[in-house]
Image (tube, rainbow, N blue to C red; front, side, top):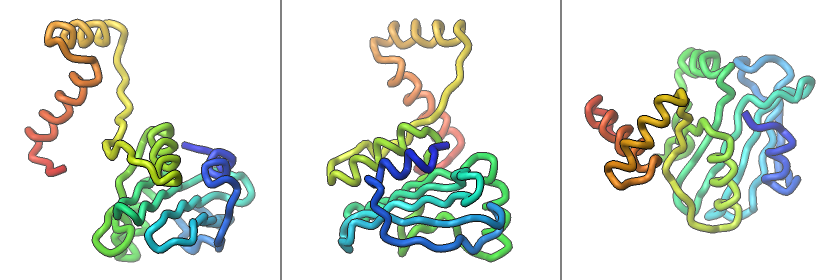
Length: 171
């Protein structure tokens, strides 16, 4: 999970709003900071963190130009967040209007999206997925990719798409 310092660097230390975070899933000493560029069709970034420990619980990136929203929730608190959302009968996936959050698991993926959104540049809307392979598995998959004359990343993406299709999940 990214740190408060890293989030501050993303927003160039520009804070436009802040308030106590009123949900209890993250504890009692929780604050929320926002950095909005001031344009309705612009962008904003949010961090939710503990004021005493500086632990970051959640970060969000809102791209109003393209109606996209991304977030990372600290893995240690995802269940508590989901439980409180259910108790409050709130759809925590909804960012605004008909825009849902896309959950990000890889810090660098979040950084890259934020930096591009802030700069007004095009960016990859795909989500990076963390993978953990043994050395033997990695070698086997790299050989398979070589045999198919594709990159290892293309092989993994192809396998993930096939698994999603077999599971009947709509992306």
